[in-house]
Amino acid sequence: MSYSDYEVVIGLEVHSELKTKSKIYCSCSTEFGGEPNTHCCPICTGMPGTLPVLNEKVAEYAIRAGLATQCKINKFSKQDRKNYFYPDLPKAYQVSQYDLPLCYEGEIEIKVKDEVKKIGITRIHIEEDAGKLIHESGEGSLVDYNRCGIPLIEIVSEPDLRSSEEVRAYMEKLRTILLYTDVSDCKMNEGSLRCDINLSVRKKGATELGTRTEMKNMNSFNFAVKAVEYEARRQIRVLESGGTVVQETRRWDEAKGITVSMRSKEEAHDYRYFPEPDLMPIVTPEEKIEAIRKTLPELPDSRINRYVGEYGLKEKDAELIAASRSMADYFQAAAHKTKNIKGAANWIITEVFYRLNEDEKEQASIPFQPEFLAEMVNLIEDGTISNRMAKQVFEKMWSTGQTPSTIVEESGMKQISDDDELSKLAVEVIQKNPKAVQDYLSGKQAAIQALMGQMMKITKGKANPKKVIDLLKDQLAKLN
Image (cartoon, rainbow, N blue to C red; front, side, top):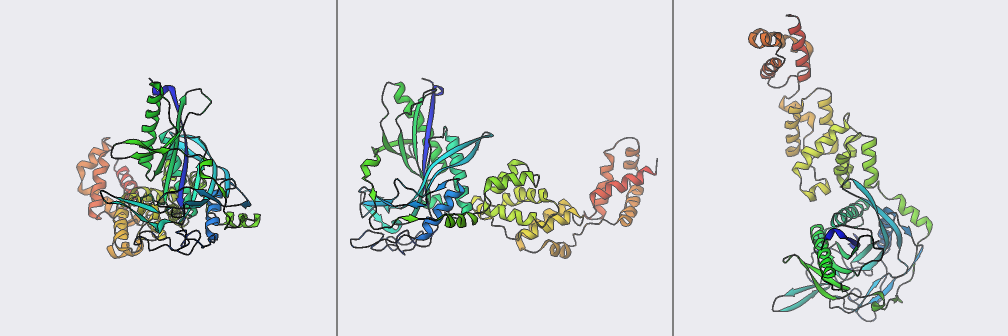
């Protein structure tokens, strides 16, 4: 058996909870973490005689996500009942969309190992989330209906992914786009972003798809990667041993590092879809679609290209900054105020990123305004402070939130750049260090660093290093 003889074919169904304040069909709160069964009502728990009313923001957010992923938008869309019984879905059906989703035929670009690849998006549709089961060992199961009716979008990809690396890149890119468009908080630890993985394998060169399995509710990039790698190997082993892959739903068991069978995979006809009789069709005029399009921010790919082309950043640096909309906005605000845009980017990538965890990077949790960063970079550029001084200024900005000018003034850090003053000091240093002078004049160029060190010592590090070197060379040239 050789794994290299097989090709893995993967499609993802990504579920993202939307950032609306109220649920999809009622006014219950969508806030995470309430006491069990306190954010629910007769509508979201499906009591007889209740009537749902669509939250207009849900459709708007879905269209925003669709436009950001190059989707076409259905001007006439409807909602359907997806029938199945499970304890966390009290009305025994889920309101979703079947044949007329809001968004269809989109794509996003991913990059893996410096190769760019387009991944097709089949559809984006809206639906309501189900509740949450809590299994108590030896006690049975409890159900929390707070999550019932939380609005979701389901983003269904084409089976265009071929590896766990592509799966990670796709999920990360999609998450970034959803955060940029501000339709979801994408907190995987709270279940607001999760995915189902449809995976099959086939011999390389084959055109027909193999039998697929579905792995449900992956709420971690790392778990998704591990599940893809394990399931691909499992299916190849089954085929190589003469067996048949069964179409089924599986789950990832992180403790054991394996996928585990849950049930046979349902098909669309098993859900007995039919139009939801209690909800009107969703009609979205072209003017409304264009109005939503105008609210979209500049998206990450566009920003990366602009940062490279307009600002001269390295592509990797541009990608790091553009990975978070908040950080990209912070950088742009600084860029508009500074004389050295690349310098501002370097400070963000080195000093700022070093101090922040991933969540803080995403929110750009920086304790001073972007104008302060720009001002500090400008002070370096005009020779007021050196790079070494700037590190001290940066530390104080971070701890106190004071402006760079205030810190420089109060700490007496201002760099000495006056030519007359520095020339006098250069003459003094040359007179007091005859050996270093003789070494330099005899051809040992490195000897000037000793003289430079003495200059910095007597000025307490405040001398402008570039000017010091130039003035020392001028004075030493007079001795030849």
